[in-house]
Image 1 (cartoon, rainbow, N blue to C red):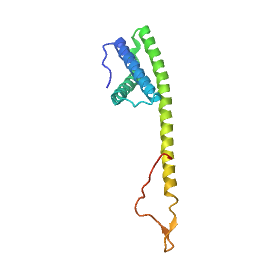
Image 2: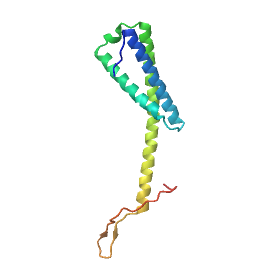
Image 3: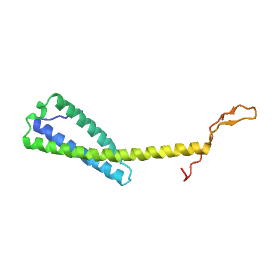
Length: 146
């Protein structure tokens, strides 16, 4: 979805609003992650839609820089500063998401190791001398030791 703007200044104002809103949504996500609170689904949906529109608009401007060249210099400076702030916010957001990813992967590995430990090697011999292969899956009980 592309922005509909009357002129370059109007387009830059809309980009400025999008940039500031994206920064606010990313900052709130980061705050929630650090506070170990669940993310708000409605805000996540808004962030995804807004980020997609932002990406598309930046691609249009990259192809045709005349779309914003006629905007006042003060407005372009505000957009530049807002974009820098957005990138800093996104860097902090990425760090928080990576921390969640590392923790989640660690939990999955710990549970998998516990499953293997509880099931044992499984390479027992049957009375006929062949390896005893289990036909049905064996249940696993995960407790606090996992």
